[in-house]
Image (cartoon, rainbow, N blue to C red; front, side, top):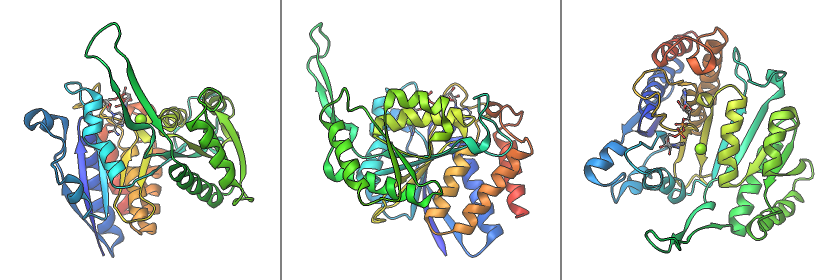
Length: 354
Ligand code: NAI
Ligand code: MG
């Protein structure tokens, strides 16, 4: 079996961690056997944007559609306004390839710890399901004047029944597949009275089909407190594009570091390739230093391996990663003393002994 992967390293540490992920994936395929990865790298980055004026060529999305999956590093660099880089690359891919679900698991890996004093490994095991196609990131709105005291800018959130229903259904299926069968819906329908009210309404409609799943509802502000003070009370979480974006960075920090958190941008219909990327950005503050934590990139790679049907290899990869963190081979953000290459080498060796 050959799995054809489009790789988009992007900017900053996106490049380091993508290189590391490609390296371990090749070792994984060779060790486990029975399948291969064929990578095609796309040099779509902020540096190239500054040279040629575009992130993706006009047929970029068509090119990506030919692959089985997409592996993405990070995009964004201080020389380019962030809304230009995000809308030049990552957001059009998610939207145009119908990747309407973003799955963000969070747990405390072996040999690592939460910054929360009493939080043990079994106390924090969440999956955040992020609506990935509409809501606050619909891209609708405008600015009235270039610059005047009377300038008005709007940023319109768009919620559709179809869009809400499909993400709720995915979230309920995820909750049902986990031992605790528990789903927390995050909202802000006290202050936002249209889109968020429809969000709540559709949640309760879909809930009727999932009588075996325990549900509750949290306002997003109170949710941040609950994540910190009662992590064990949560399991599967469904939230809007913006809310889940924010809550998943908090979740990652509570599980040890933003550097370990993975994400899967899924088109559950499988009509288009899905895209896998760590949740962190290009981290200009540490770019070029070789110290980025590659664990989030490896975990994202494992999710990709699972999505293309190589379950055994995906489990093996995560086992290898946790064997390495358990031994204390970690980057600085996790309290260790290794660099990106050191952790990558240790994971490769671990895979070879699987
Ligand atoms: P960031 O996630 O890049 O960095 C936040 C902090 O976490 C920094 O101190 C960084 O050093 C640290 N960090 C992040 N990943 C790490 C890793 N693997 N190992 C160790 N430390 C790590 O977020 P920030 O600074 O807000 O954004 C930087 C750029 O990345 C911006 O241009 C932003 O728009 C872009 N961005 C892109 C994303 C994407 O491509 N999907 C997602 C988030 C941000
Ligand atoms: Mg984010």
